[in-house]
Image (cartoon, rainbow, N blue to C red; front, top):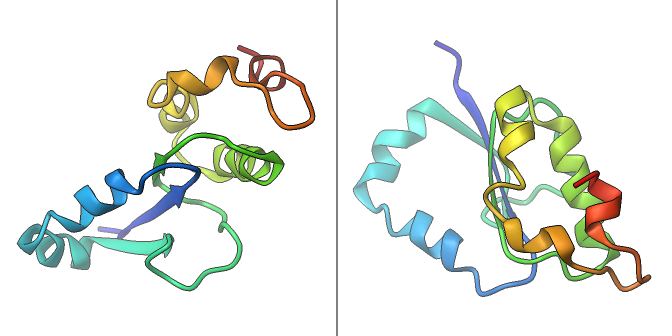
Length: 110
């Protein structure tokens, strides 16, 4: 069985989701042989990779860089269900305006 390519992205916020992930304690040892952590604040990767299977997205879209990364995450995730569900996990961003004044709802097609 192929290992799952896992990414985590931390936008503006408190880092609570990442802390909760670390609080899985011993389960992380069980999870480790089943996943490759390909992008995260926990690893030293500078660019979001291609073909990610699962991505934990945390925080609010606070600036143009966050918005660009969010679109990159959506474009590079492998599973089509994830492409549909990435906004379902963070519905508060749907009507957020970016620093340049345009609405995320208009840029994401919502």
